[in-house]
Image (cartoon, rainbow, N blue to C red; front, top):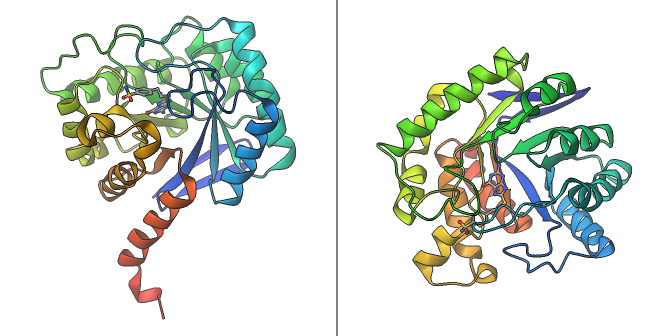
Length: 280
Ligand SMILES: Nc1nc2[nH]c(SCCc3ccc(S(N)(=O)=O)cc3)nc2c(=O)[nH]1
């Protein structure tokens, strides 16, 4: 059973937890930027917390395929007000979805507890900055960069290749002074993977247990569901729940999702099938 610490907080990962997504990017791939206004974003945060999300992931840079970079001040302006809002009004973990060391630091100083980096601390200065911040960090695998990652994804054996990537990033983290117990891993569904690669990762997810670190999974509403089911992002709830349940059964400790209450209902049924002896 894993537990992650951040400051005086502890997150017990004895069951799969839900991380609610708040994309504050104008082109958010799934909600079409409807949360571009601060008030709407705050209402969405309130709803996800009341529905049972234990972590809220705040992202100010779109990293969907083809996305362009966003400048530092723009990203800070998008995320800091929301980190402050959650820190002030809610007692949940705040995750900052960024690759920029400056955004990591400012977000942690504003109350964020977890760094979620789709580039696995490969940006200049990121390793050193996170070592100084002493908060947990999720290292996600991406092949290439968002603007080109879907052009020609290729692997010898995708699970073995991603494990090698993780081992190298873990070594780099430890060499920089980051504690191993502050590291979470994520294979990065949709980040430089074909449809087949994504489903092979899901099928073989349990193989990542060899690294003995918590696993964060984000497949909610992604194209691996849309291409298979021929559904638009807002029509991918059933697919997202199916994928999330499979990931939970195969070892996911945290699910990064858009649809919080539905995912929790799904996980609670799964939990009850494990813990039926405690039921009346
Ligand atoms: N740890 C972690 N953080 C994440 N942040 C994001 S943002 C989503 C970017 C995106 C959107 C859509 C597609 S697609 N073409 O597969 O539908 C790919 C990437 N995702 C993840 C994820 O998974 N883990």
